[in-house]
Length: 171
Image (cartoon, rainbow, N blue to C red; front, side, top):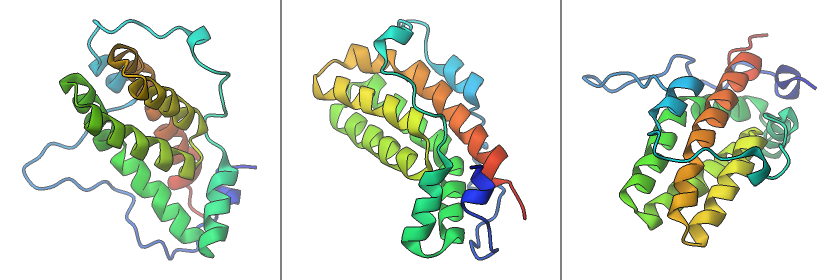
């Protein structure tokens, strides 16, 4: 099932496609490649065998379920649009808290990322956020920091997939 067929837009979402940036601030420009590059090289690469089996990048059924629960597919589509617009902010919040060693802030940011990613069907990113959460719960900030590069990459891929297959799709 494709994302557009999972949750068609009836035009009632009332959310613009263009991201808004407060006056005087530069627009966020993190993409999958630039977000991954923004993580300093001092963090070791996470090896594929360190991660559980890969979930689908995006599961369109999650948005379909959200639309059904809300009894309004347009609201689910609006949530997905908001998710894509907030990706840069979510990632920067998580990375900043981790780099400062702020365990409570890191946990707050990763739980927000995990939950919202699962709600839009970003299963691979939600799974990775769960791994980062486990590292934080174990007090392993080094491991959590080492997962940032993958979080940046999967997050960018998830946003790209949502924008291509769902958020920017018009009926």
